[in-house]
Length: 322
Image 1 (tube, rainbow, N blue to C red):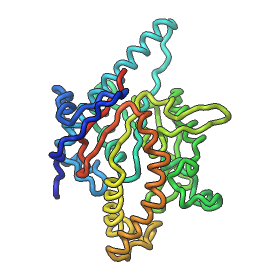
Image 2 (image 1 turned 135 degrees about the horizontal axis):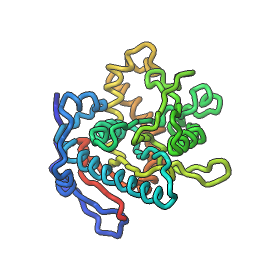
Image 3 (image 1 turned 120 degrees about the horizontal axis):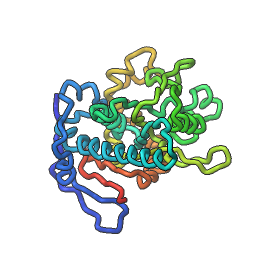
Image 4 (image 1 turned 45 degrees about the horizontal axis):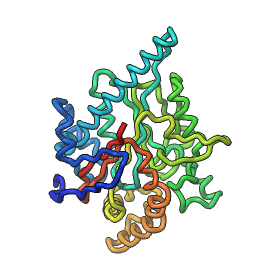
């Protein structure tokens, strides 16, 4: 297996006023301090996404410092909890610490979420870390077809935003057992009648395209991100994500699309040129439009931004100033 290594090209710095601290990879990596690396290559192989040959060095340089930072933030929230309990004179049950993780289709946010989940679960103070993707809150295909939205799947209007908000609200309220729907990437649809449950873990990672977007709920201006304790945006240039999307489509054509039950099975027999043209068409007409109009504008709402290079390695980290 080919292992990708960080780009040798130094990132360009922007000295204009910014609410973020900007750190190069070389500046960020030492912030892991003496945090041990709990994952080995075998673990990482189970966490990588399609065409994302992230090296174990990437975990050490980028994700370990991030897990250490989050461990500090969770500990800080615990101190606030204790202070509030002292003020009230009673202790309520702690509620989960919620991390929102956003970014484009094919940018690698699912891999980021899985690696972060694995690392955070190794810290002794919060061993129970749950991961929920917002795919389960897409409207079923039958509803999207009825509303003429199948070509807008992934856009804000294709989600049951009210149900997603209420799910996160119930988790943040400390309910013991909160159900959420299940999505199949094979059938490209919600699995009717199937549910999974969040049972008050220490940390919940909510990963999806739309988690930092804003939407009016029930007549009031309530945003999903208002319920987050921390938020992350995975970023890369649009033309780079386009390349990754096409590469992933070509890989799926040789693998997942071969499954007769796959929604995209019709693409399995395309030639390389036909598959590339089809992937570019889908990207240009749907995913790039969604990225430009809806996803990228939410980047500045994140507390931490990971800026990736062509080889999928993170080149810069932006951390919002306090």
